[in-house]
Each structure stands twice: as structure tokens, then as C-alpha cells.
Image (cartoon, rainbow over all chains, first blue to last red):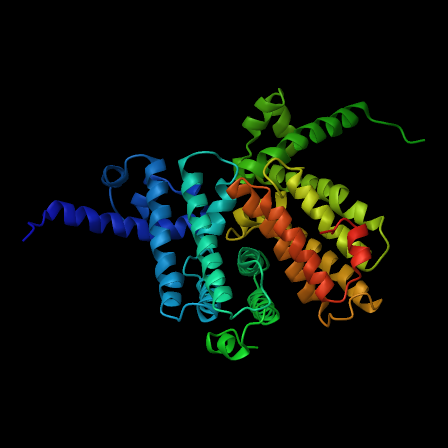
Length: 215
Length: 215
């Protein structure tokens, strides 16, 4: 049996507690809005304690991005993996993403869209980490769409990557419009558009409705 | 004849020069990245001189948002107004917006998408100003689409606002994906999708191609 190091366990718990708060702050005020001093204040820890856990501000930002990725996977990717491969999974991904955004898993809406907008013109390791996760998400959607096409469930689609681009564009617009306009309507618009796009590509209406993409 | 006040003219020129730089800085580093000290350094003016022109940081941010609006109108809206009302104008708006984004009129891509992402969770006058301009743009697209529908140029469309939501979603995704992934491909994807969406809604292929939405 492995011997558990008490200090290390407490360190991991502290890290997790700080990161839970950090992802929320970053989603509303940006990753640049994170500071070791502010986090220490918010989680009632000492500044030197938080500094020991993360080191530099950049390391804190990178750890926050990674913590947000874990939350995103649990909220959107894992439930979709519970659906059958193919169209059902594409629909579940879209529906799950809309729910993840509208339920404000992150107080400031999708963490990665906020982080991408903040860092897309600032070269460095944080930008690279955010870009890699955005690419990972887009690739996951594209792969799911490609499987649906291969299985003959989207007979009208000859370019799964294009379809995935269009679906994620609609999802992202729902997030950004909802936040800046303070309205729920963009989610209904995005849902209707994704449903219509998948129907137009030959998707089965019953499969879409079962996955929550109903009229 | 109106008597021109020399000091006022110089003040207006200085304001314009500072704002030309401010919109670029804000598009890459955010409106929070603007400071009177940094701007003074970049335009080789004194800090007190720039402070006199703008007053507070918030007033500087609001003046920057307004200056960006003027640049956006000149780049996207004015050329589209030169096109016939209806489908030609909808297509010109979409094409013009993609060119405005991809040619980096603002170094950090669309100024307003960056500003909206930065301020959508921060209540206040800056957020309200950005929200009003986003709403203005979306309404302009929706109005142009409604005119095209009324003129019978989009016979397959029964909801111009929905159509406008979908088109602007695709345009915005091209901007954000291009920036974070460092690729031109999202512009080609968005152009193909907008063209396809308008064709599907009954748009005339010749009108779309004439406006630059060609395959």
C-alpha cells in the first residue's frame, strides 16, 4: 500500500479549493483579473500560502485553465459520451453545451470563450493552452459529426468539419449574445438553428428530439 | 462664419490621435489595458495633457468605444449602404464584415466582440455602451434581412431575426476562431456557410456572387 503524505493531501485540497474560486473569477473578470493576493483574500488563506501552491501568476493562470477544462469535460463531454455514437451524440453535445452555458456552470458563461477573447492577441503559454482546448473541443464536435456521417445518419452532409464549425458557431453566439444582452432568447435561437441545420443535413427528427433538440 | 477656436481645434486633433491608438490597444489588450499613462507614452504626449483630454479612465474607455463605432460604420455599414436594399445589402454586409475582420481593421480582430467578451460580466456604463452597439449591429442585420424578405428575395425565410442571428453567429465565429487558431480557414468556412444559408432561404445565386459571396 502506498503511504499517504499528509502535507501533500492538504496541499492538493487547498489547490482544489483555490482553483474552484479561480475559475469563477477568471470567467467574469478575466484571467488577468486573477492575482495571488485577491485569491488569498477570497479563500481566507495567506498570500504566501497561495503563492507556495502556485508559484507565479502565469502558473496560477495555467492551473486555472486546466481546472476549467476538467469542469467542462464533466459538464459537456462526459454526458455526451453516455449517448450512442453518431447523430445522438452530436445532438447531445449541442444540447449539453447550451445547458452548460445557460446554467452558468461558470458565472461568466463559457470559460474558454472568455479566455480565448482575452488571450487571442497575447502570445504566450496561456494563449497556447486556451487555443489547444478550443481546438480540442472543435475537433471533438467534428469527430462526432464525422461518425454520424459515416453511419449514414447525415446523408445530406459531405463535410463534417464544416457542419461542426456551423454548429459550434451557433452555440458560441448563444453564449455571447445572452451575456451581453442579458437575455435567454439567444439559446432558443441557437437550439432552433442547430436542429434545423441537422434536419437539413438529413438527421432523423426523432433522434434529435430524444437528445433534447426538440422544437 | 463661425469663428474657429485654435485651442479647441488642437484639442480635437489630439483627441483623435490618442483615440486612433486607443482603439488598437483596446482591441488587443482589452479596454482595461488602456491607461492614460500608457497612452501618453505611446503618443509621446504628457500624462497631464492626455488626462485633460479625457478626464477619467472610464471616460477614456467610453470615448474609445465611440471611436471604434465610427471606424466600424465606415468599414462595414457605409459600403453596404451603397448597395441596393434587400438581398444585395444583406450579402454586402456579410462580405464586408468578413473583410473588416480578416483585414484586421483593428489589430485584435473585431473591436466589439473583444469588448463584449471583456465587459459582459461587468455591469456599468462601458458594458452598456458596448451592449448598445452590439444590439445596433444585430438590429441592422435583422432589418436588412427583413427588407429582403419583404421584397420576396428570400422566399424560404419566415423569420428574418432568426436568419440574422445565424448569419452574425457565423461571422463572429470566423473572427474568434481565426484569432485563437491563427488561421484564415474560418473565414472560408463562414463565407461558405452564409452563402449556403442564404441560398437555402431562397436567395438568388447571382445576387450573392455579385456581392462577393461566391463559391
